[in-house]
Length: 249
Image 1 (cartoon, rainbow, N blue to C red):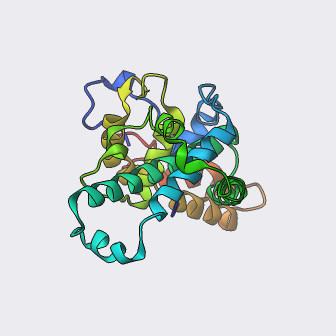
Image 2 (image 1 turned 30 degrees about the horizontal axis):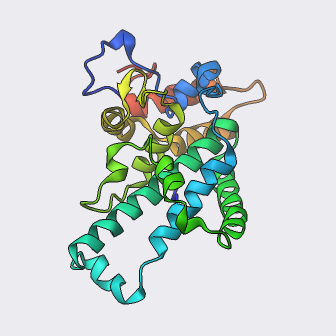
């Protein structure tokens, strides 16, 4: 489900209290000890997370083919339409939660590897669960959604997200605390506050491009015009994204 992925333009916090944006490549290499830290709040069991992911997908897929066209158009009988919207949103939440779990336990692996891990585990758990009495375990399924942000419980519309929005939600679910807050901010507000900054800053591909250029252009001493290749790449990236050599706002 992941096509697979900021911060405080709207937040009341002061600049000094601004959480680091670890999606920004510059922040990643300036503060690796923070950005690569394993989230110790992730203490859920893998089988519980994947049970929720698989079963939420089963519920969403249970609708009759005869109803699908009306449901897609939003013209089905009201009760059925609401249930369809809600099961889609719950399935989305469960998928994002699985991705957040994998990203938290293995913070060094790539997005592609996370995607592959999730897909492989989903298939394994789906094969285990589909022959059981999962439709009767309503209480267990309800517990899957106890900590879900309100957006993912909505029965008013299907919430479909862009690549960047997906990545922000997965980040938020990975970082949230027991009160459903990220850096002291309600998780849904944190996501909304994060969108403008990440849209502006996040450009890992450009950072990789500058790194590649620095490797190609550097001389035997690892310098470009007397500047260490890494610093040259950083300066060019910062100038392109921030408009200055230091990646300052």
